[in-house]
Length: 112
Image 1 (tube, rainbow, N blue to C red):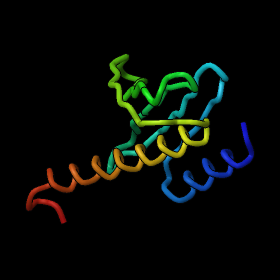
Image 2 (image 1 turned 90 degrees about the vertical axis):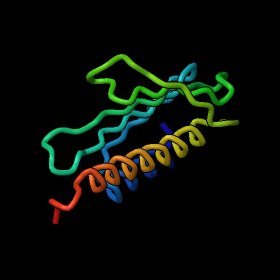
Image 3 (image 1 turned 180 degrees about the vertical axis):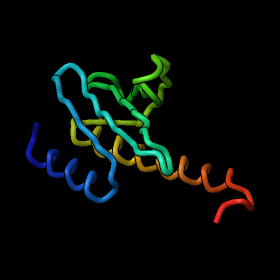
Image 4 (image 1 turned 120 degrees about the vertical axis):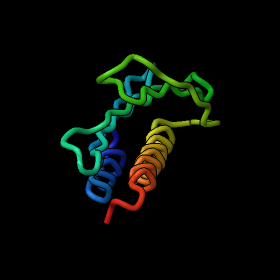
């Protein structure tokens, strides 16, 4: 894996406390994320899979450690593995923020 991508992943982990790994297997690309849940002892796992010939089509496994369910998205043109990794990291952050927001909204007036 390119040094630039390793540095990008390390910085992402340090900045957001989300543990990520990436794999460029030539015929497919994969990013795994372990997203900690607030006030819970476990985490959510997300997996993103695509490839250089997939025309931007992505398989997203929202919690691949617990289920084989997946959704598909199209992220547009992904020319390089680095493009894929950057878009996956952005998606991971969006998902984490959305999840955190739902926890806060679901709290009602009983939370401080």
